[in-house]
Length: 148
Image 1 (cartoon, rainbow, N blue to C red):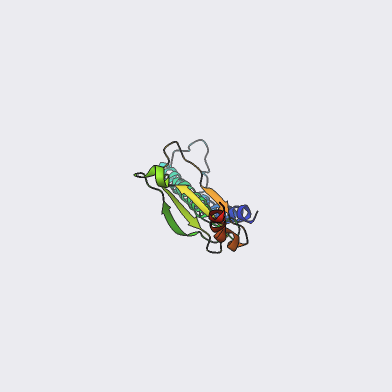
Image 2 (image 1 turned 90 degrees about the horizontal axis):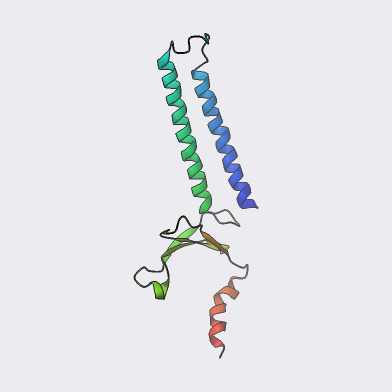
């Protein structure tokens, strides 16, 4: 729940900040007094359209950065995921599997795994939560090997 609340908060802050930018652009280019002759000052309309185009590109870039930042955050503590590890190999796919990159939360909350190459479209990254007791996860492979 905190993960999505943080995402909505970032979007709200960006909307307020960028909304102020649009108000500034609208204030710089006031509406024409004579509605019958809107093309008397064509250069002003061209500059206004160019400024609005730049605002749109800025909005799209900020939205992209917000989504990109959110993808690489821990779902529990909201810290940035660290320690990227490359796993798998195309040359030895039967032994090691497909190439993937895994990021972990430094506090042990979970792991994010994403494919290095999306052949069949964009595949979503897999978030694997870890239990609170790290010792059970660390000792689990040893218990399986002791069984006959």
